[in-house]
Image (cartoon, rainbow, N blue to C red; front, side, top):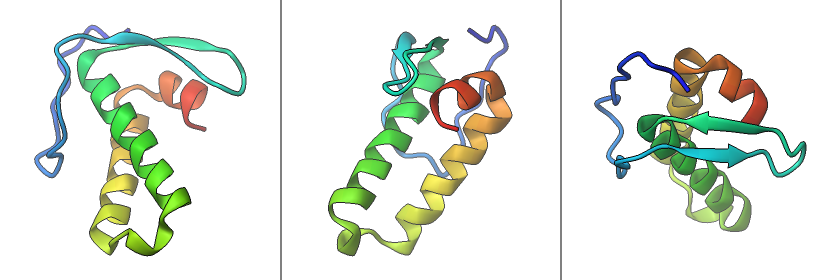
Length: 87
């Protein structure tokens, strides 16, 4: 888990959790401890990905842009966790 203070992006309007959590990659089984902010962003990414897969016609350009911003934020703030969970 990262020890530095992480900043929530201004564009992010999702919930910020109080605590982090251990997250498992469903494909590899690898596990990573995420901070509260990282977990909030991870859940946003996974939720966005789900909506894009099951209801692609409902997805707006803004949602797609925020999804890509979230991925970029995650890569920048915890590249190891990004590679383990999202790459």
